[in-house]
Image (cartoon, rainbow, N blue to C red; front, side, top):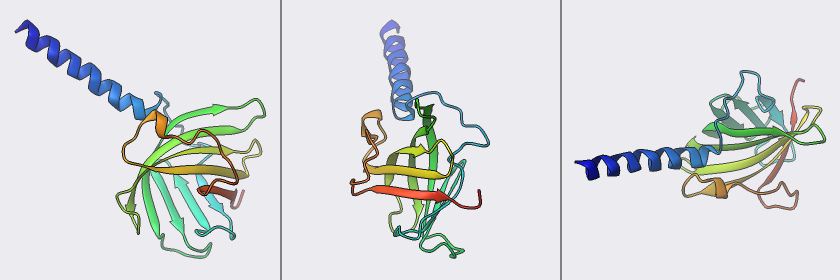
Length: 151
């Protein structure tokens, strides 16, 4: 009986650790996070991104009304650098579109003015802290840059 309780308690601790591992922190997003809103760039393959509390929607053109890709997403952590830029680690799963079912993790930066959003995303097999990109490099194949629309 004592062994059974020990094994059960270890499993609870391990499952808690596994969940917190990909969440990366206990960050609780605010209703008005800097990342939320509509972001556009006509030079990008998908010209518009709308980020909200529970995910994001990508549109082929700025004028499109129907998204080509939708994701459920969460903010894992947030911090501000010494220049005043806001950084996020974010993870999610594509729920519609050509990449449906794909899991991803991203490192994102909102400029101190709040008008420029840069990020690099990685498709992952499983969510884990080590799967986040470690930098935002404009030469990275998965680099994206968007500009706040209407603000």
